[in-house]
Every structure is written in C-alpha cells, then in structure tokens.
Length: 79
Image (cartoon, rainbow, N blue to C red; front, side, top):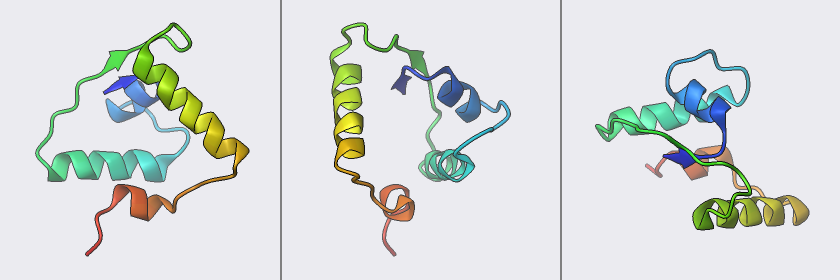
C-alpha cells in the first residue's frame, strides 16, 4: 500500500486508531479475509508521484462535487 499518510500506515500497522475507525477496521477485515499481509510504502505528497497525484486529484474532485459512496458498499462485497 503506497500512501502519503503516516497516520494510515500507523493505524493499519497496529498503532492507536484516532479517526476513521470504521474504515480502518473494514480494511483490516478485508485484508485478513483475503489472506493478505499488508506492506506499506510512504510516498511524499505532492512530490510528483504519478499515482499519488492522481489519487489526490480525484479526492479533491469528489470533495468539490460532494461525491461520496456509502462506506459499506466501498469496502464490503455485496452478499
């Protein structure tokens, strides 16, 4: 998992969860359920990393358009 968030790396690695606990726990459940061992790579934000810049672009676009998907639909497969 490449991320520009030290908080996300820490929270998913077992540090104290301070925010977005439902999302953190859902990600961990999905990874465990799939038998995945997560590895993390810190990427500096706004440093020219193509995929990080793309994610940042879409996050800002979603905020501007007030787009949001229900968290359950995003992280949990349909029955």
